[in-house]
Length: 114
Image 1 (cartoon, helix red, strand yellow):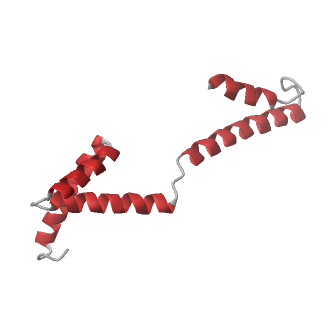
Image 2: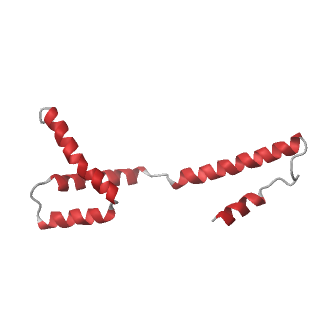
Image 3: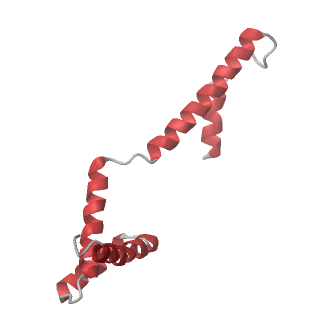
């Protein structure tokens, strides 16, 4: 929360008080830079993704597109498709569904090589 963030920054404040000379101003600038750097590091770490997660997501996308592209689905394939859709957001589903048309059009333009 904001209170925790404020307390964390408050504890690190320079003991000299407001800047009156060069050394206290330097301490305040160091304090400000440290606070910004820590917040940026927290923000970057929050969005860090491991390669295993990327590979798993790619495999899931490939499987979904393959199932979606198939014209005749068995009951098990339909259930698997629904199960995959339960784990995806609507934007991802729409994006993945648009890919078979794009790859199909590209395959047609390349002479059927895909």
